[in-house]
Image (cartoon, rainbow, N blue to C red; front, top):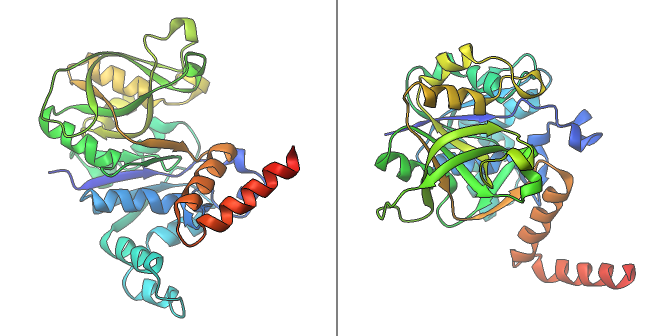
Length: 297
């Protein structure tokens, strides 16, 4: 049973400047909930309670939020209205045991993940990128864990992306598997991975998004992975090396609605759609949006 997780939050957040001069990107709220909290909540709900948060110098506020618990959490919530949201924050942060690992330089996702090696050890673990927020009754982490139980190995969440967008993703070369025991999603066996290919060179339109399951052996492979795109240690390259050395790899075409909250437009889309679904502010927000649209015509 997998109980460990790594949440990668060491990026500089340049797409949200100047806001990220003062606050870590992962604490920017989607409506009223920080991006980081959605990842913590998904991990805890999937039974992953030993969490390593990979942070960076200057992001102490992020680390403080993730490690709130017990008396510290109760003190932080003194005077807060006893709302459902407050109870959920309390429940999530109290159930997770979070340790911090610092990535001193932004040298790529593979490098960031390697910062958790000492804490994770040789055990398999789930990796989360808070930039990707997926809404579904069964979370992507739970979907991946179910697939892992059927087919152990490397697992990655994928979705179909526009052909012209392959230069922004790791792309998989794969073939679908006929597995009827999965309750949700479609599993593919991976035959190759390419980091950010040009559209004409992409082996498929299935792009990797921010959820993975790795065996503990990924850390040793990352150490042997040469710099790739942008001169960084790319996790896609490390996965491909591990796959070539005999570890099975699978891509889960998950079910759910993904929001790329790591860019301003995707972040705004998520906030608006979440708000429209909230009974307390949905009607008022709808009125404001309709008025703004009328005035912009």
